[in-house]
Amino acid sequence: KNQVEQSPQSLIILEGKNCTLQCNYTVSPFSNLRWYKQDTGRGPVSLTIMTFSENTKSNGRYTATLDADTKQSSLHITASQLSDSASYICVVLSGGSYIPTFGRGTSLIVHP
Amino acid sequence: NAGVTQTPKFQVLKTGQSMTLQCAQDMNHNSMYWYRQDPGMGLRLIYYSASEGTTDKGEVPNGYNVSRLNKREFSLRLESAAPSQTSVYFCASSEATRSTYEQYFGPGTRLTVT
Image 1 (spheres, rainbow over the protein chains, first blue to last red):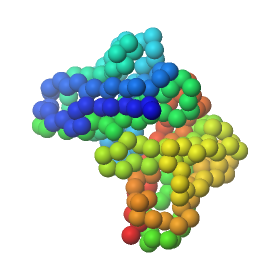
Image 2 (image 1 turned 180 degrees about the vertical axis):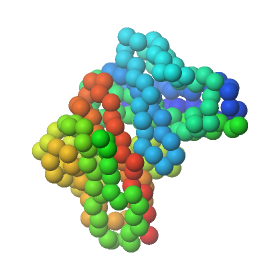
Image 3 (image 1 turned 30 degrees about the horizontal axis):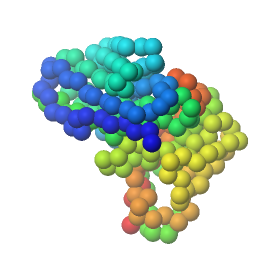
């Protein structure tokens, strides 16, 4: 069964600090992996997409990495801001499916 | 350009009542989806429509029906609501169901069934 596991479940950091969120998946065959940001009371919004051939991709202060061999991805947030407080969801699409597999998300709280 | 819109934003139903959740997108996307999101759970796919005129079951379709009214609109119906259907419902759309196309989500409908 395709699964996406995220860690930690929740994280609290101080404004200005960096943090890294983890995503492990068992989806096969792999097509792509997206990181979404979901603000409280809102729908998820895509931050970045990783395909098989990509190792690193940045979107402003967000940097995603992918290791297709170990089936792991990470999302690194640099110089966190209060507006980074949200749930971050890892989503993996299998090459043979129309249905993406969602992780349960990491809840990030940034304190001033 | 409103993106994906959903109505209503909030709804309270009694067990056994029926209702329809409405979704519309103005991005000319072919594919549309309905998800539910429960505390501590990932988003779970209820139904999807790869293109106008087609619908398919997702992971948790029991208790729901859908209609792809036209390319813009995709509705979700609860015929006889149950407390287990208390959840936040998200509609999404994308240019295609596979490849790298991004899913765009609506703001959600918060449904409580008592």
